[in-house]
Image (cartoon, rainbow, N blue to C red; front, side, top):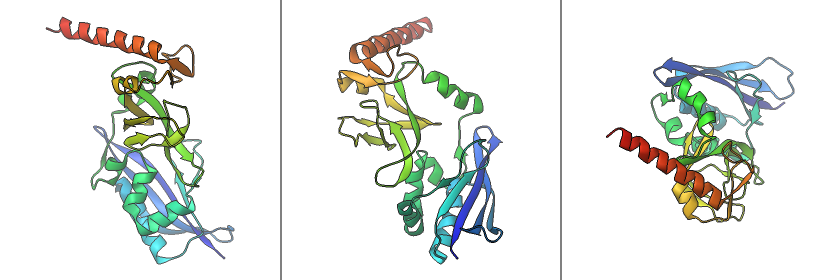
Length: 239
């Protein structure tokens, strides 16, 4: 019989933008022939502590697979980690965590993660529909052809899903190279830098784009210029 690891966890808001994680790590038989056995309980721990414990058990015993189940998001299906990620968790958990979350630096910090207040977090979906100093691109977990499942960003140059890294470089043949930042399910690309790349059009299926999913460079430039005028007027009104 073969066994698997099941990590069930949920984020717990602690107030003032702080959050920690509760959960449990279990071992169970892949064929479901016996009840799951609790291996470790988590209470108000940093994100990285969950996977440090997973790594510890992977180093001590051979498991068929590792399954992640987030219990605080209704309808979110459990996710089975691919073999390369499991091996990386066994040998280098810090690197594995960076690959599995676009919150890299926050997730690996020793303390609690500083999360945006709920009102701001909920507002990102609205802000993403506008043009400002940054353009918002969607981020989601994606299984690449290599077999690796990791956070991916919807490339503004071609629309393909590419690894969500801080220093973005499109892996699908388009010439997008840009520095990105990340917030609650979105990647932020500096609008001026994006325009300076001078693509003839951009893949930006946002509310500001009536010709979805593509928008011409000229139309995006016009929206950005409008934003700059509004920002300048606001600055002048405060002086």
